[in-house]
Length: 88
Image 1 (cartoon, rainbow, N blue to C red):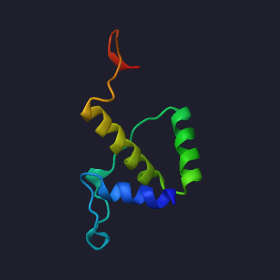
Image 2 (cartoon, rainbow, N blue to C red; image 1 turned 45 degrees about the horizontal axis):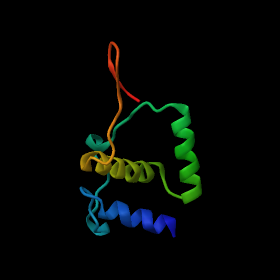
Image 3 (tube, one colour; image 1 turned 180 degrees about the horizontal axis):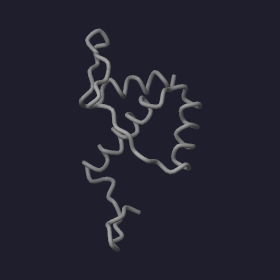
């Protein structure tokens, strides 16, 4: 049930194609790599196992919702400035 809802949310997310027959494999331009601290990767692994979804699917869903929250103003960062700005 959770996987079905996750699939629906991903298909309905802006910038995704809801028609399975016209979806293409991701291009190199859509592949990004980011360093994540071990505690975050552990949490992602736990969710993937619990929900039975793949890594890309889960990260896309989580990032889509987080970006929507930032863009709507409901999630605002706290800044710490030293030599380089850092999100807290």
